[in-house]
Length: 100
Image 1 (spheres, rainbow, N blue to C red):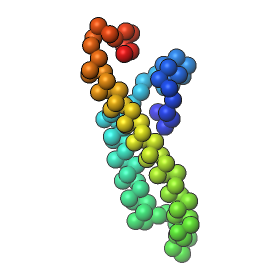
Image 2: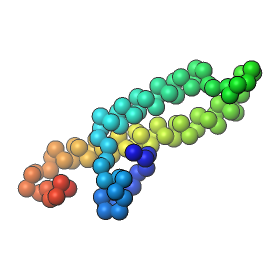
Image 3: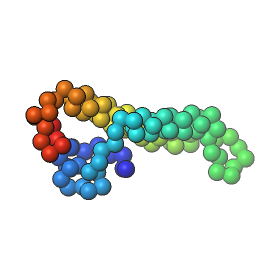
Image 4: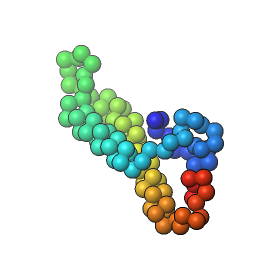
């Protein structure tokens, strides 16, 4: 699944790849994987065959997109958890076609 956040109506109506939204457990797993990758990167950044130490500028440049990806995962986790909370409070009689 791509890491993008779009409106629910766009997900359900226009993009077959985005029909299934990730569940909280999947997003929690993704977060843990990304966090572990960040920890490993901070402790031992890849040096691309060079003998010298990675510069802070190179580290920071590589770190920024990784942190943004982690942030997107957290936003998606928040939204998925909020949707689950709302679904638990929504009476069955108000649901239609799997939507609330």
